[in-house]
Length: 80
Image (cartoon, rainbow, N blue to C red):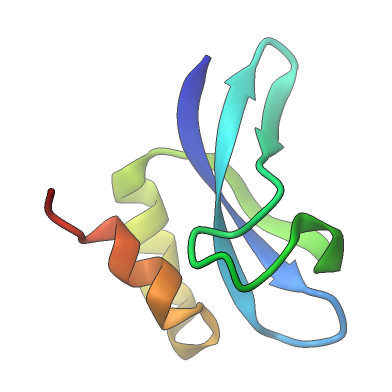
């Protein structure tokens, strides 16, 4: 499986969090917690975008702007 990213919108709000996702033969499956660990997949109403590579997740987060969790976005730029 290949690890990719999904952007998911919190139920009843405009807040978007980034989830790691596993690419499968039939699509992508988001993991249970967002990257920042502050939102569970069960709290989301829909996926904004899914199956994004890291660079694509950065671009989409920038396009959406302030509605994306800053902590989640910072993990896309972390150096290890």
